[in-house]
Image 1 (cartoon, rainbow, N blue to C red):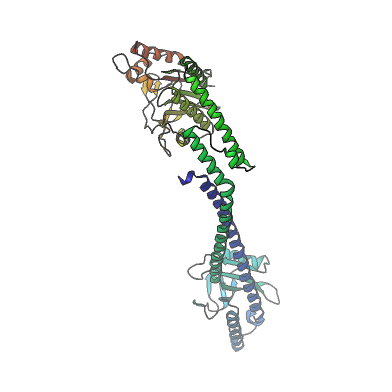
Image 2 (cartoon, one colour):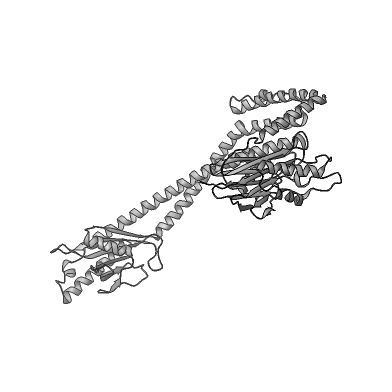
Length: 536
């Protein structure tokens, strides 16, 4: 699969890094470009406002002129502002007097638009409500706090005025110096959107060209120093795995790089030599039956040593477990360990098959489950990760059924997930033992990408959780009759008042009494936990 190809993975990571860098540069440049153009618009509008302010006759706004003279001065100002609006590309120039009580209303003195404006001007004396809180604050800052300029951007625009900028400056009377009037210049900014889109297109094209060139150069370099040597190493490893013979020419002679790739080639050569020596040694050993038994005995001891043999004595719980393999080594395993001060993980699992392959798969599975559980997460998440890891190199097509639970000691809450395993048995005071039936998920290592269903149960002080493998329920007698879960529950219900260790001994005795002289067909593993609660 392409996603498992190291060249694809390396290139994909490199592409992601370059793409992120390109996006960052584009976004940063876009922001800087927008700021620069917006500043230019603001400066132009401000210069227009200052020019318009110089055209205002003092007598016109103080009321010192009236009648024909007032009308003449008003018309002259109107004509001058219209010319200014058209020459400076100002959409709207207007002079207002805000209501200084609360600045919620404004009165227009004069307003003009350029010839391209498509909305009506406000007549002299027209009063309207302040359009927004932003404008109200700007009026107040200019009139009361001495602000010489206020700017308001409407980046997103609206249905009436579109994308624009408004610059406001105070107009003071010569006698009192008070700010009674505010001159406003509005300028449309639709061109800014056009400029920004053009900028994005050009920068994106340039970034694509640069990224493409980098990828070509990087691809050639990567192929020479990494991919080609790795393919040679992989091909030699596959050849050796199928033939188990020495190569015609060692990898170290073909790959002379002084880096890690060259070291890997030499290591593969050394490994092949060691494996050939080991194969010869194993061949000699297999000719001796007693030696094989000795090796299996050692393997059984190693396997048993991997399982917890010491059972902690704590005020919150009592625990005990046993495993009796059907052969020298088996595929069943149990495990328990503290995840933190308030959580203990409980594992009961059964690997498909028997003997050494199952034992090896058991060791790998146990290590992966414990390691992944210590990293945190729910049992469902833990089993999903372990499943994917076991599927990667599962050439023997083995699988493992798992019941994984995490007990919170302070509350008795058990979060669990059952991957094709036997249902646990739970004892409750005055109720006895019953099977804790939940929805099962497929066994671990059957298929990549599986999701495992969660379950939950709460133990009360005095409750007991009993875990087991199918070797208990499927034990058979000489007439091929199964022991079954009903006999197991009956045996458990006769253990009231016993310790965790005594419970397991009682069930083992019940199974042995049932099977009699019939040989043990499957591994038989059990775990019992008595929950006492957090206590004082």
